[in-house]
Image (cartoon, rainbow, N blue to C red; front, side, top):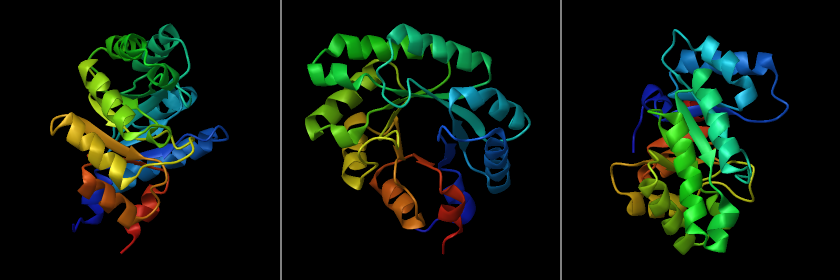
Length: 219
């Protein structure tokens, strides 16, 4: 697959989720996103108001994580976090699913957790982070199906803080499961142009990366 720098940039959520990120770091992140034409800027909730302000007259979308990075918050907390993010200008929500409930086989709790965030997000797209490195193939399929049934617009591979990141195999399985009309975001460990291209060829419609500038600049 041949993609120009701008074409590849249009797939990427330029991401900074380290707890040590400063306000100046976020300003640089947003400036880079505008300059290079990245699709979105993905940040922690505490940095969302600054990000939304920086991007208010720009093309990149403000993207915020919810229940991050463990997914083990109460559903009511995730919903409140989402509602507050919407008020602060979030244009997309990346939530971590309740992984423990999935492992328990508590499908009802998994679904209610996602639905609570989707409802709180109103019409803003919700991506469900599965943390595929801790799931087997059957669990990935099940998680994807429940995410779609609960109203999610995307399924996403990883937080980037788990034991592993995106893999081509996981992305292919996710795309096969959700079909052509639901987004698949590959994130976690994507640090080169070839990494990103491989994920897109596998079926990813969005890439989450902190090495975004390097990725699009490589020849």
